[in-house]
Image (cartoon, rainbow, N blue to C red):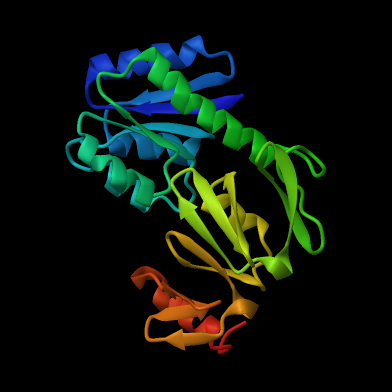
Length: 237
């Protein structure tokens, strides 16, 4: 069961999404909130797996609310403005729903969440991911592919997908960069940008605010530099 919180300052939209949630057997409506501050109280007191979050709200926007969260649930943004879609993907949201929201479009977004939830919680040896000593399994091209840690150069996040770059090929899999960051061994892999995780042993050079891996320069995100650069230089463990 996926526990859901619906946040929207427009009562008709709040009621519509709440009704949609209750139509899906795999979803449980944990609560509703008409502003970001009320939503934060619920998030701090209850288990929420999936957040339907309106972007434009008075006082505190959905984007700023999401940025304030240390531990983020799955998030589906709801908005009347398509221009906010890229902002959502920068924050690793699963999807965004453009108002007025149809049930078919709602269901499509929820299916993405359910797939990610199954992959994240599948036991070792399951269909999507199992962690061993030196590799992970990822689902790609309708099969499970074994990816050895030693082969990974870097991992690039693209909304709800990631591209695992290994020598001579790329592996594209439905996965969140955040989830991979939690799965991969922290002594070998480091997130240096909102869209990149790199293999520390594969870094051949530091060039300004970038690292070089296999001839490609990858920018270190501004918010990551203070923590990341000493680790890359070996000044911290």
